[in-house]
Length: 246
Image (cartoon, rainbow, N blue to C red):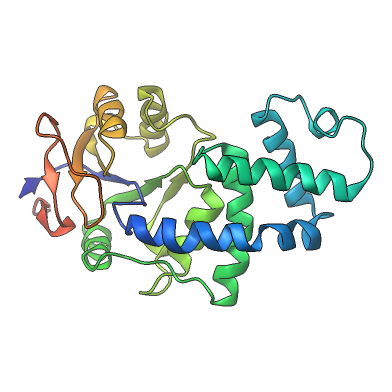
């Protein structure tokens, strides 16, 4: 058991609240299958235009105008975005623009009911305990804020968004940089030491610990095997987090 007497919980998603296999075997393939059609049917939408601008900057261009190299042909422009998105996905590069694009595509899947987010069995009971205990629960994931809200709004256990008070993605900062967690603690309006960060990635936990947060390493089915030298407490279930009597 881990005794936690703080006031805030910060959650990773993949490998922490949901299985890695759901993300890699369901969500990513869905985004890849639907990518070309989505670009064609939503090309004129402001949301997609903003996302393409972000992808252009990620690719080293100042704006889409530089990325297109003067081409006004929409089919060519879509092909450029399609090729870059596939390249990033093939290389498992967590670029912010790609995450935004995937989030837009996943929204269509969640809203249609084709996608429903997986949760480990202990997650909902823990969220209910933490909410009852007046803990401030938030999420920090490499997936976009929009994708996070879709995920927790359409789970196999229903809409869980009312349990969360904040969502953060890599537009705030990298997940392996202590400054990101310092910024998040300020958003909580808590001392970093009052926040428990739960993740399956030791590099992220190291960064959070360097910022002063409490940490725990999630040992879930399908996660990479933890190394013996990790200094973070280990959890196989959120049931192992003991809250104080208030």
